[in-house]
Image (tube, rainbow, N blue to C red; front, top):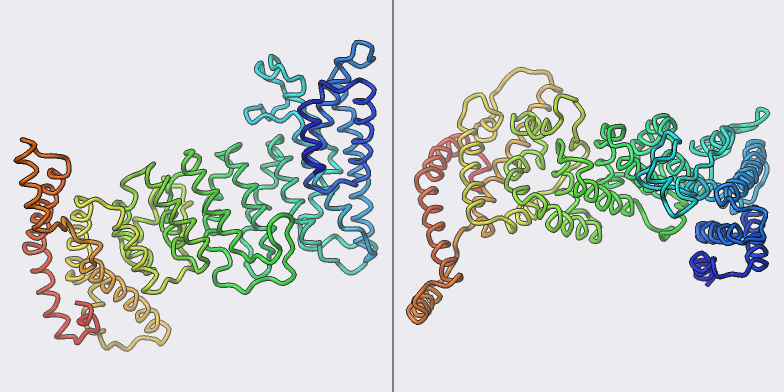
Length: 531
């Protein structure tokens, strides 16, 4: 294919003869400046052109021996071609005239690829070459050719959903593919210009914060990926936008799909599930690399993604959360289980919910929230089973103890929201709006208590389940081997933990449940069925 040929040329460019290299370089520059190459070929063509430039400068008979200068020349020329094409597009479209969209898409994409010529992930954005770049064997490394301010402005004009009108004409909608590519191009420019990044971060955040029914998934997905790259480059600048990035884990779940979805790369018929997939992969990667922390309710948004209506999204989220993320922080589920019962039920009035939401914000007031997410009983129980299935017996005992102390015992306190769930609501003369609010709070508290009962009786929460036949076999094996094996020690440990669990249930949980049953019977609470 054409891409493979260009890739071969970029790797073997030093072996091409001078005349062939000069001819090939001229042809590539012509194709790039006339925008005859599709976006998927532009990057490979630029790489091949760099390799050919190096070959031409190696020729002793050549008048040019400065690779950086040669590359800077044709990069500047291509910038000029892109600027002219985009200038024409903005004027033509602003007047309501027709235009060739494929040429515009290619020119936008070409600007982004040109901006990355000589880019290194560890380069300084000040524009001064570091010692590492100066000592590099690659003469192009560290090369930075800045586009003109007018070209950057033209790209920014394509970011909004409508193009600026010209001569009083009616505003024209910006093509979605052009917008999606423009955000990617601006993101690439921001990687090498910190001042531009500071200017554009609010634009990116505003685009992600839009209602899902008025934004194209391709645009939102590209913006999210751009923010992810900028988070690695400028961690301190992007950190405050984590709540907006985390909201993409549930993007479009409760909104109608936009029409005429168009995206370069993924299937155009895909809905916003592509945004949620990218959010899972991006955020998990940033957590694993320590660019972001488990701040606020981020872990609970991941848990909600595990029961996404899209099977691919839910499987990806569960695999990521229960795999590398749990391996990085083994006590992740144990530390957040009790909090999850309150968060997944949106029981915001309880202090446990407030403590979970404030986790990791360090007084900044910027934390991931759980707004707009409504999970069914079936979804919540599936989340609990996922978490319990990855806990050790000791952790399950600890979870049971916390549920007994913080939920069951907390429901017996007179000033607790959970008390409303086990008692009849008081008859009071309150405004209708206030009464509805109290009913909602009571319903959420009821759901918390119901989920707590379901978890305590769930088979997933049981400890040390072993059979008598296996115990007898273990004893015989121990007698033959003159010592306990690892399996035997594990079985003995399981039986011991099981006894500890039963003792805790008898001494702490059951007495609390008996007191609670009396109150539930007196108030004829629907929780009696769950109890």
